[in-house]
Length: 389
Image (tube, rainbow, N blue to C red; front, side):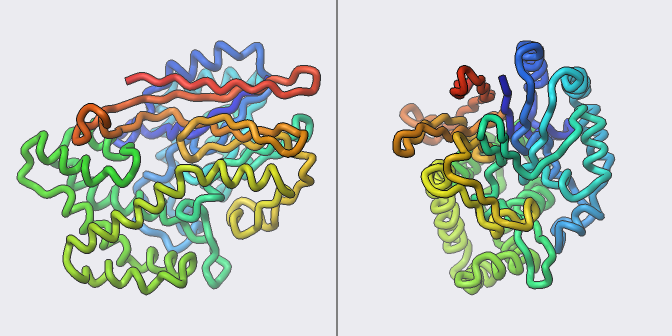
């Protein structure tokens, strides 16, 4: 029996750390300690993206590693000591495989970070992805299929951070600081977990009205987002990844047409991103499982220097995380049944209360994990999802 979890985003105990499921995770480990042989952490276990570097936007991943302060890992450990102590005890019986995501890819690039994570968790290996030869299951975080959240090369063969990382760090160091002076900590956490992301505009209006603020949060957010697009590192990322649409960003840079046009452009970009994300991982999984299993090198920058190519009959299942939406799908490939599973997340989501009051927001927490057992050479999977408000 094997256990798969992902996207816990365990932080340092500051206002950005919304992991409050320490006891639930400990209970899960204790429940299956004598039943499972392997634990797979399918990425984004630690929240290392929201770390405040000396420089907000790095030119390269190597620069990010050079500026990384190891003290953040001590803070994460101290904020969740009981969890890590139990995980280390768990590792004495069960093998832990740590697969890097886009919020903790740092463990792949820095030996110092990796060794520190090993001492915190009891884990002895960090992997970019994993192919289970015995059970014919391929495990990968999934950000490799998301253009906004995968690493890329510049023209000098340097690896550069993702737009998702640029946005998280820039907005955290600019808009979030301004917002934290006005709103309580719990609302800062809610703001980070609005789904779909497009509803951030409605939420900001909702907060303005609810707290009678004499401050236009939405206008400030759009203004800072435009500043982000104007940043040299962001424009370099856009030029590399979207050369055909690079000049389109001049509308943002020049604030052409004023704030209203800026808002319209942001809404359009966010809408198409969310629309595509809704089923992009299932589509990618079907393509891989129904045809030859091939992930090209361009998707794997920072994770592999070559394509991943496996024979079609050597992969029964594909497991990912990243999108925070737990799911289990059987895929018919001729006479053979395969599966795609997403491990979901241990996070809360802030969403509009549709059907009751579209302008009101509610908070929903989700804890999910996947268990797979082998019985007579057949794989039996169980996706457990616990939701509470």
